[in-house]
Length: 123
Image (cartoon, rainbow, N blue to C red; front, top):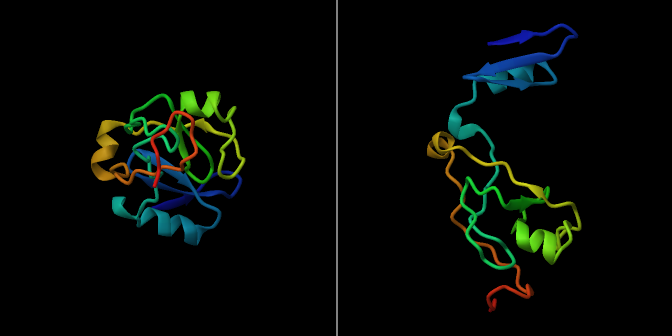
């Protein structure tokens, strides 16, 4: 159920996590969500540049705010920390723990942008 914290910010507790909401109605909606309703990162399986595998627990995965995904070698070496698609910063992608992967599997769709010096040829 939802409750109001000091300062008037409603929250919804869902399992072991706490979700901040801006209204009581939003908090009630969050409290009623099922695990399959939760929106999570895709966690794409590969670097869009060189096609290196990036499993859900990879510590060298980098993403932008649009979830473009690159390995640290390409992100830092070729793109100097900037997404070649949107120009935004490439930051460390959060890891998904094995227990969470069961309910929220990582994407299996491989994305290749092409034009990478180390990458495979893209038709």
